[in-house]
Length: 268
Image 1 (cartoon, rainbow, N blue to C red):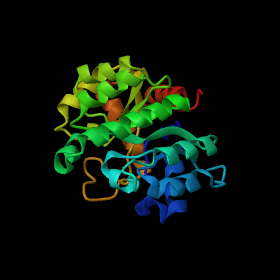
Image 2: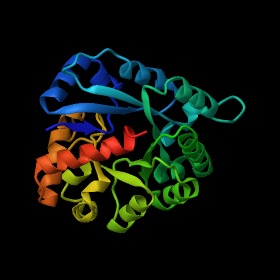
Image 3: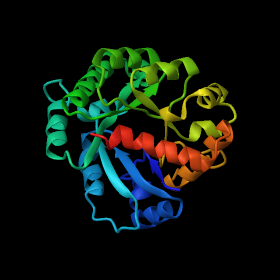
């Protein structure tokens, strides 16, 4: 079975400093593609460098996403109080063959409370949604305590290629709103925790055509691995957990989620 990690920060030192070993371990677990989202202008080039590597044929294929994460707005702040949207626009144009999405972008309600920057978060997210429209790309969306705001922005911009709601943790009703807007849901470590019953129950009911697999490595370790850096090889355990929840075979889920990944990232 072949599976794709649709969200892995492979350029972070926990993974990049042992890149060959990391990719070998992924291959052994059937992970044949990895989408690497960026978080700010500071790592756009490192993400692009990874996706441009001449990787040996037995290793996973690597693809970039470029964006500004709501946690790192200060990294994107310009001297004129604008953000690095023009630079992002230019990079998306120049690297179209490597870049498969805009992101990681979105809105984080917890950070908004701490930094009093919800208007700026919304503004930067909306500008990235417009870039996704302009470049005919999907968008990878971060959310935390922000479903109403994220949904409002997505409804306004209607990205033709849709995208992924990264690390989905919400109700069935929230999930169906995203799906109705053309988005798929990133399923990762959350479903391995018994306490996440709201999300587990939602994922059990949702159409398989709406789901993709992810790890968010090196963040978001699976249950039983708390305190350790997450690893993209753990995607096989996410697959197993999803199979147990949905009572579909791992092979069935792998086959359909691969088709879902193709539809989002590789159908343009």
